[in-house]
Image (cartoon, rainbow, N blue to C red; front, side, top):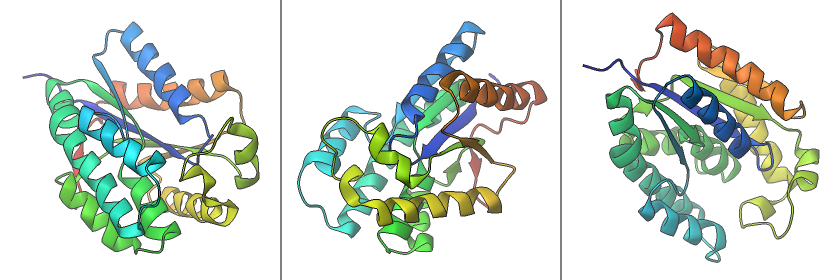
Length: 215
């Protein structure tokens, strides 16, 4: 049987640089011979790409419908992409996961953090990451990072995004063994180096759980 895979997620506000760091980490791992699967939420599957268009560019979406659409995307991504890759022993690198929904819909949309987490845990069969990298960008820096027309979530306003950031920081403080907090204002290469160091330690230390189940 293959070794259990490693599940790494990137979290943070819009403009924090998650997509870039996902790509850099995946490239670095492949260069070292690891099987790597990249995914994102929403949009890591064909179904997810349709859901992404509805969520970000499809007009008004009620908060509860928003939470359910994210959960549907996540359920399909786990069943068809993430879990099979982990079972093969691959490293999965994801741009957003459950913690995004808890921060954005549970806290910032005031739907209830526990309720949204329970929904996501049901959708994913309680699959949680081995390592979550939080790229912490001050809310005041978001506008300068986003170019062009903002999508529906990006345009939610500074109070919304500050609530999201506050929740991420609380998550990291409560679960330091899973979370790695990195100042997103650092240079791209410096951030990548910090992330690589932590990922290498997990791989070499044999701590990868291939997606642990929540207690």
